[in-house]
Amino acid sequence: MAIAAAHSEGELALPRALEAVRELHERPAIPLGANEFAVRKVIKLHQLSGKRGVTGIEFSEVGDKLARVTPINALVAAHAREAIKEVSRTRSSFRGRLDKINLRVKSPEFSLFDENRGIGLRCHLENRGDVDLLQQVKSSVGALVSARGDLKRNSVGQPIHMRVDRLRVIEEAPARPTLHNIAGISPDWTEGLSSVEFIRKQRRSPKVIEGGEEQE
Image (cartoon, rainbow, N blue to C red; front, top):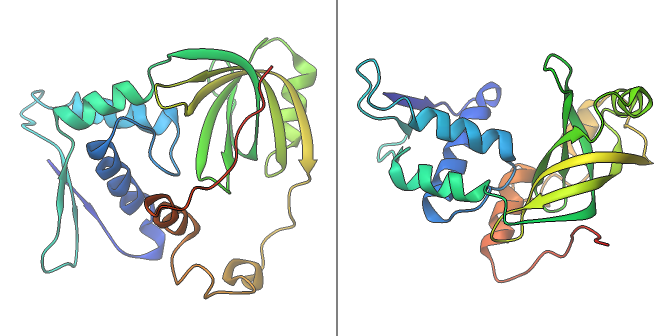
């Protein structure tokens, strides 16, 4: 089974997924711009191999004369499993934009995204019956927040998942975006790349981007 990644603005999810699979092929770490949930999706895609006539799954780019094909093979799946394997747990905090919330599951979950480091974090409430905290999460979508609770990390120290018991709003959600906001006041600053692609380029350079979580 081949999944083609289109290059239109409305189809950004597939190119990003393709890049995430490439990163997982290289090392057992959560890819830039992804989180635990996205990595689990890669594992589930690999599990389709050998079922219902599916012999393998690969991503390919449409429109390139020499398109690179990226398979979701056993190595990618092994790295994905390692990337979300818990090796340590500490009481800590994580600062990021509260960008998604899912209330359709038994235990409400939400995600935070650190825009400076390109790191996503999947979160659940420590006490799913905490009505006040849940209401605070609902009202903070789009805001920059600091979440505190039990934080799991993988073998390379990346945050995987947090059970949140405290949430503090640092910066309220911005107003609805305008064309000027989307274009940015300095469109050439990222060299024409999206924010995720620009951070990925910085990660591959010798320069280290500082940031992190506070621990007790």
